Image (cartoon, rainbow, N blue to C red; front, side, top):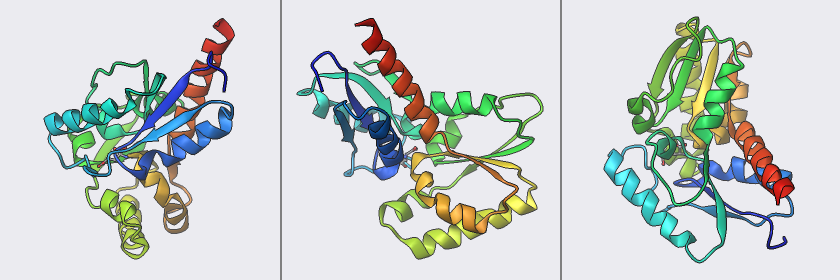
Length: 216
Ligand code: DGL
């Protein structure tokens, strides 16, 4: 990395942002990318908005000694609270909202943490899309603890639920849930479009960073 290239930090409360981080590392191999999490306080999803804001801003203090020029918030729970940061910031929520515009879902389930679902920030991309917000507070701890057996049971449960609700698309509005994609693909109807904005988020960051490099 040369000093003219931006330094980037990817934040999530825990391991949820790993997918965004890995995709970004592939897209921008010459850049220094730092992964920041808050393992002392994960899961954020059950905390109050004030507590989440405090935990997040305290975590950002740890970036002070780095020349960070871009923060990627790979956490819906934080993104949906629209917290100001001292850095130019791109969020996975923005990426997801863009991605939803390109879909033609009729019955769209939004899986997220309590806080994300309560925020109501993920709105219907078109009048012909009906939203079904579903809080899944049990999933982040299972993923953090790598409890494959229980996670698989819950994935099967949601598969049955979506079938009974005639859901055609599911937005994974928590980056942790990307870790369950192989289980979802195994146990859910192949008719369900599983929407994961991790890659879109990484692509948006890549475009932004490349535009900076071209300008400099
Ligand atoms: N990956 C975070 C998100 O996207 C998890 C939130 C949590 O810590 O509960 O919302």
